[in-house]
Figure 1: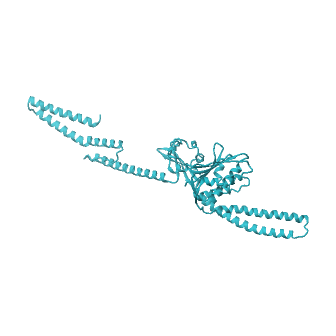
Figure 2: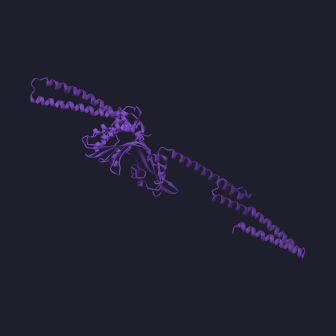
Figure 3: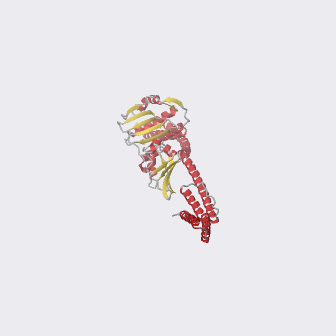
Length: 440
């Protein structure tokens, strides 16, 4: 039983004794025993009152404080009890409650700020629990992984490697504390970091995904533009002089009335050398074309009409390979803003790559869609591995023995200048799809 209960039992017992003595006095008459007993009871009651002031009331106040702590009510304060030692405890308790309240407010403000920072950050954030299952994904990650709100329920609670995505597969390969640059099959580049933090005494891991596409593309473009300009200048100047000298020698030899057999062979060799100079100059010029891409002159065009007008020319590119072409165009005739000349180069480069990957008897399909507005070129060629598809848009990367890596670089530059997204990959059905999304 609590001390307060014992106090009230003793107080009630003394009052009862006092009433009993009064009753005895009324019945038996006044005696000095009655006066002594009454004085003793009054003294005990006075001592009990002091006991209540000094012990029971402080204990009751402390009990109220414990209840406030249990309910986590840090806004309330305890009043003084008029007892020096107890008031010291009350003062310490009130200071502790004030500090707890300030710390809680500060913690809430920090958490609110962190929530705003995470939700508004352009960097993707994936947080895992102690079992390495996803507990939280911020909006930037949803944009990067193209996740809708309805898709989040299928992602939360899963391990990172259980999500079917090239990005998540690369993330699962990162060791804790490691950072790496990951190239995607849509031309985007991400700096991904695998780190950890302590929460409630347990170690939680998280992934940071920072989009580096624009910065790296600018650095790459600046680097290869300088290299191309330097090589183009030196080679073209050298080839012009060499080609001119060869032509002069060749014409001098041709003016000889009767040429010997060795002279004829020399003329033929000079002719081959001259052709090689011309081809080398054209080879360098192709690289220079990537640097000289003009800004798009946008006009409104029906994507279906754009394809129909070029279908015969596209089919003629594969006339010697017996490739079947088919088109599946949407009935809604979506219009897009494009530079017709530049987009022709994009289309022809994509079709050319598809043709080169197909053996005789293959097929290419061109499809348009409105949800979202897009154009997809599908082929049943050799296909592209995930490792290769991420590198295809790197400067001068090519899987062809004599490839220059110019075609897809040109495609990427043109589409980026239009502000359109794209992707290139081979699906589980073995079909390779190049999709252009005409939405910003």
